[in-house]
Length: 79
Image: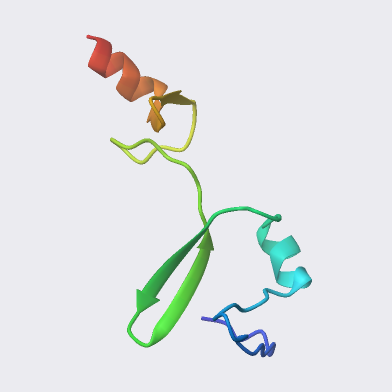
């Protein structure tokens, strides 16, 4: 991990503000979903990318009943 030298405090509701410079660098916009991971004693934030529920592919996605399926898996299911 690389230190940015930026320190933020957590507010009374447990929130922390991500600096604009980091949001721009990571392509994170308002209301984007963020995934939260724990690795030992570290908390890792990652921009959520929608992917196929079967293979994890994030290209050529089709939404079906609120779930995302790639065109390859959809074709395989149809056969």
